[in-house]
Length: 185
Ligand SMILES: C[S@@+](CC[C@H](N)C(=O)[O-])C[C@H]1O[C@@H](n2cnc3c(N)ncnc32)[C@H](O)[C@@H]1O
Image (cartoon, rainbow, N blue to C red):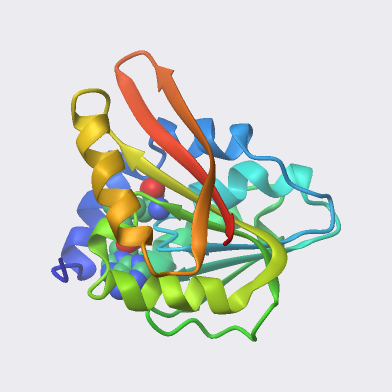
């Protein structure tokens, strides 16, 4: 899907900009205080704002290819006590503006299904992850949709050089999602 633009960014931010999956998954993720955390397809930056207090000595980078989405992310960060520590950059998953072996933790929360080239995006994430680094993927939806999402995700991961290390189902009220923690294969 590539129909993200200023209009869809505003719609998404108003309706799902603080969606519970970001909070649930960020809270369920292990992170070191000095980690380099990169959120690919960061949307409004809500996952990075949530994890920021646990990364006081680290680096927080939000990437999204849609300029209007990044404007909204910067606006929301400016109202957050830790927001000034988040750096937002315009970039798609397929071309990450990061050095090889430079990230400890990469988030892709409800993001992969929106990339133009999933295989290229996952190869990029493998390139920038440090050897002990982790990719955390979230896909929205519960069973039976969750089972389908799992099959699709495992197929997407095939050949990426990444492998699933942990799967967790998260839920709050009527929101459900599956979170996969992946490491270098
Ligand atoms: C469903 S939103 C999820 C946003 C955020 N991660 C969240 O969970 O709230 C999908 C995001 O992917 C971004 N996106 C679109 N194409 C992309 C691409 N090629 N690479 C990375 N992100 C992309 C969109 O701009 C949008 O912010």
